[in-house]
Amino acid sequence: MNSPNKVALVTGAGSGVGRATSLALLADGFSVVLAGRRRDALDETMALAGGGLAHAFAVPVDVTDPVSVANLFAATREKFGRLDLLFNNAGGNVPSTNFGDLTWEQWRSVVDVNLNGAFLVANAAFRMMRDQTPQGGRIINNGSISAHAPRPGSAPYTATKHAITGLTRTIALDGRRYDIACGQINIGNAATPLTARMAGGVPQADGTLKPEPTMDVDNVSRTIVYMAGLKQDANALFVTVMATKMPFVGRG
Image (tube, rainbow, N blue to C red; front, side, top):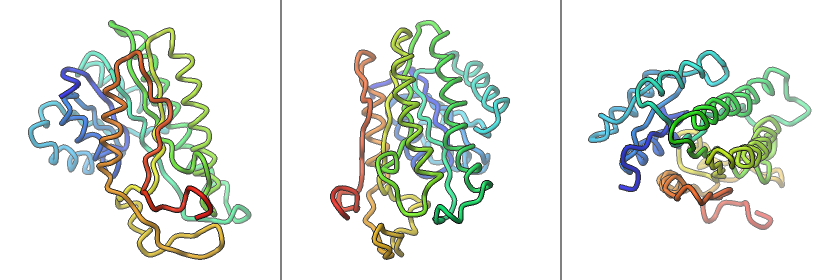
């Protein structure tokens, strides 16, 4: 274990990448605040924690609501007294939709979670890390391959993930004086319930529908544990972990 007595907070901890990362951080010695929309999903993650259950603390949160986010960090402070790591992971999407057919409601629903929610959580974490003693911590934002290149029909998701890159760079810059490091993990085709559809085919740039290879989600959680385990004088600013054969590098 690399991180005894350190405290992590994971948003979107009720499923997929967030669940896998929460369990990996618990196994690495972190105490972990599990945050997510649904109490039942958080309870499922808690049930999988096994020996780490004593160090897991579940808090339902709506990341788009400033009051709910404030309550999350108040609960974290009351329970553990400090915060050393945030995995800013909560996100959402809408079905693939050609740009000309997108509605304001679709655009707003993605931006509210992926960008506004990411801001609210990172902003609260930054303040907590800045104001605690000893000062400092680490924020890891969940970007995406879409922070580099879009899929067809993905304007809201792609725009928010490009924005996360700017957010990461700015937090890393503004955090220097407070010993707050900020990095970003860009994930490509991790096998979760959200990517199960890839086996049946997803839209490609040439207009076809093709299945895409995926990778075990543990590759993501182990990468985040690596990023979290760096000494405070080092920062993995951008890390891409992707399925080896996914159509990203080159022309697909």
